[in-house]
Length: 414
Image (cartoon, rainbow, N blue to C red; front, top):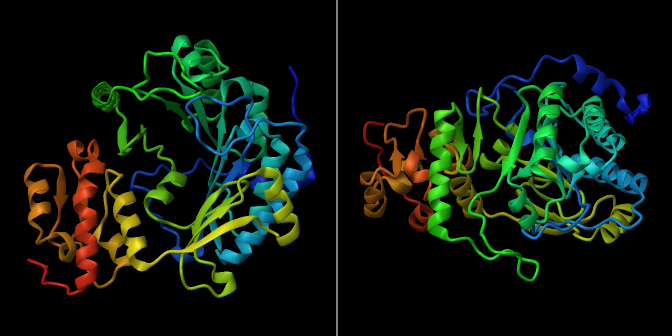
């Protein structure tokens, strides 16, 4: 069995501290931070590794089949872009790092260690920060997983997709159900309590047509979703987001940043980010998209220090729409305190409390709205989470209308 040795100079102080740090606290409180660092000065970091062994028929992420990739050059560009965007953002703390793709388990642990060391040098990266790596069973033998752990990874997200060999072939996966179970067992030994898996439902029973799967029957997919939710809840899993479940408080703190509309910085080809460029004197949050094609991205990073292809300033209403749509994906919903962080004038009651359409959703038991300005504010019920998209067709127009009027009304019992 081949082992991977990491260069000690690259692992550095941060990785050594991470090895002895106590296990990251469980996110029982829904991911709320106790740190005194202001939200505007903290962010999550997403790192995109764009290469895969082959193209899966269902996947539309930014990925490429490698042809003579010089990983040292890619690594250098990831490090450079991380340095540039962290400096540009002005953030003082990075709470989580997520290596996604593509198939980042194809990358060398050296690359993971180099990026983490760069982040630790540029800003504060707590030793117990959540560091996630996406892995496929065929590219993640136990020795390689252990090497990623030595590089600083403390959480694995494994792309199982299915435990049925026929379905795996339909999806174009390179692993078998047996491979998946073996990788899962090895991962749970190496990262106890910090392993997640991706599973797909509603798969069609037909063959792949022209490189794409036909759409599944929507009624069957809905039935499978409801049944899956019930089975997981009975097994002690909390549905903390529309399509995410966790047991024993092991929520993904990185993904929670997305759903809470926190800042996140994306590096690598095609990566997305949302942050305020405070380091350059910016006062408005921007949506940023990095150049898609790896070779062009590398050229831009070498020329400019980063490969940002698009910068889109987000207006106040656009940001509130994201707060609403993303926050309602979680079982916590949107608290009054969280809403006021983005909109200090209009309360949740101002926006939704006097709407006939929203009243109908409340009466149907799909939404819950607290008019007392207590700890929680607006959230979906268990039944409402399953039909969130249809609820937003009512809620977003209500927000847009209230924003245009911008005339707060009294809060009953406030």
